[in-house]
Length: 78
Figure 1 (cartoon, helix red, strand yellow):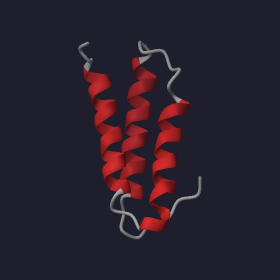
Figure 2 (figure 1 turned 180 degrees about the horizontal axis):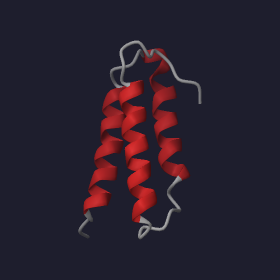
Figure 3 (figure 1 turned 30 degrees about the vertical axis):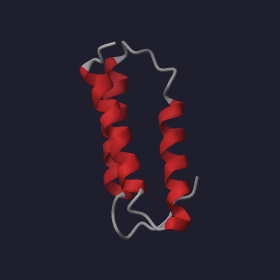
Figure 4 (figure 1 turned 90 degrees about the vertical axis):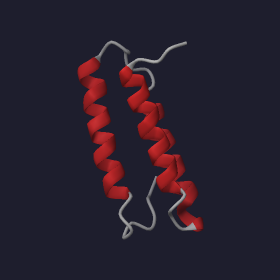
């Protein structure tokens, strides 16, 4: 199965989230993973042809990733 450009972007964002989780302290790493998984699960039922919503969520996800990737962020509340 071939993936569309948006699907590749979404998978890329998810992989980036998981990579950033590994940089966090051991005690809070699972909190970051759970948060990332929940954010992606929330929007799983979105229509794959709703490009505007998908692109909006990708931008939002990238902003959140930039914020949570900051070294000053040690833990996240889920």
